[in-house]
Image 1 (tube, rainbow, N blue to C red):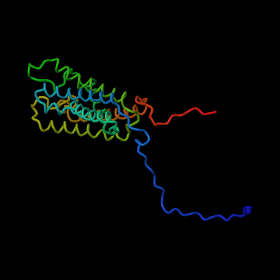
Image 2: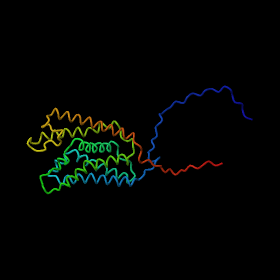
Image 3: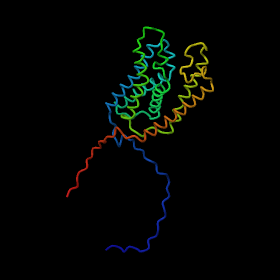
Image 4: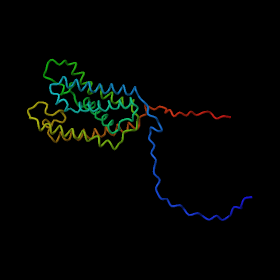
Length: 262
């Protein structure tokens, strides 16, 4: 026989908590195994080589390589080549992608290069590719300009749309990305002050030529460009969160659901 259960059971006092519960962090690789993406790695390697080829050709056919490297278009292509090369290596070795702050900055700057060239610069041949030498074929100048300002920016946007997971860009990074264009503007103005006023090409861009338009008009143009670049950064972030996922795939977990028995 069992003893009868008493009707009145006294309430036990609560056990005081001596320490807070510590959160447990599980790495993503423990849930979803890393996946090699050889096709993305090869395509990004081609993109990096294209950007590097455009920069190399520009330095070879110009009479002043240092002046050529002072242009935003060459600097953005150099940055894109380095970032894309690192991204290709990570995709090949199944490592985590690069931080979105870095890849987003490279995407923004190369997009600015393409848009400014096609919307604001009416000269089909960039100024830094103009040379006094008559031995440089016009076809090389045209090819270099298209590589730097058309092919590479378009390929970078396609890489972002077709080979990159969405939702990685953050709005708080948009203001951080404006640091480099602001520093570049200050560099242009300081460089122009250090060069003799009679030197041709003292200002690298016609819409930022303080000698022709005055500092007030030049600063107004710079402010308008800065606001446009920030709006472009916000637009890229919004599109990144709205676009579909082009690399969605099933993760192999080793378990397979079976139909119920009976």
